[in-house]
Length: 278
Ligand code: ADP
Ligand code: MG
Image (cartoon, rainbow, N blue to C red; front, side):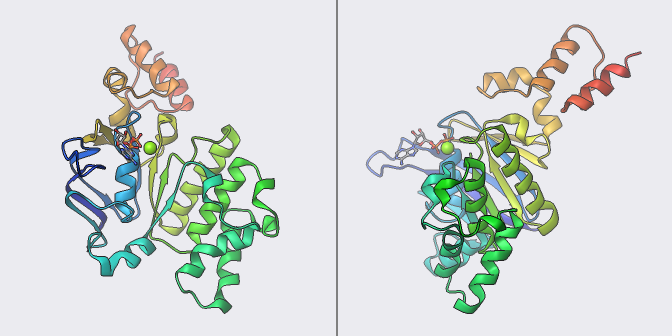
């Protein structure tokens, strides 16, 4: 599989007067096309700073970020970089720009210079994709948090990016809103092959990810499959990361001497593992 994003020896300081105070330090990683990657790390570990590097909202102080082979520092590529990687942020209210849902979804597409005659169709398709078509004439402030976040996602989908970065996009939502957005992400990944980078501190949302990358204090710490990452609950706690309840329970049973498989991630897995003890 090709790499859609490559980060090479990336360091970044917000304040050029304090170059030693680095938000990111010598980070190297890559994201493959079509992957669903989770990025986790405690507060202030550099996740949002890294996310903004993925589509050139921030540029490295040292090192490079390549998107489909384009260096984000290359000004001539910036529009193509932004077309390739879309971003959905935490607070849906800050992402609403228009007073009517369909105008809001159209905003980004219009800025890409898409022909006026095609915009309506593109916007309607995007609204259908997030199951919000019937809300197209509504005012965004009348919608729930999860619905607003789906509108923000529609605005990004309309621009047809190959990759979408979700930076804690579920954090402000209630459980229903969170599961709406989560299933939307998986649908985009599975059905349309969109590469998904999902930043969260709800570890249980990453059980179905292809790969999880852990950031710690501005540095890349390690990566692995969910099973690999969740297998060491003590290490996760040391990194100030929460552990999904089921994983913690399985770990407790193991420590109490029960022979529970290390592949336990979901409730169903745990039930099966316990049944197999007999
Ligand atoms: P995370 O998203 O993992 O919580 P951030 O990328 O937001 O982490 O922050 C990484 C570091 O950069 C933190 O020390 C934070 O205080 C600092 N930082 C974040 N945004 C800014 C900013 N706009 N100006 C200065 N420092 C910032
Ligand atoms: Mg953040």
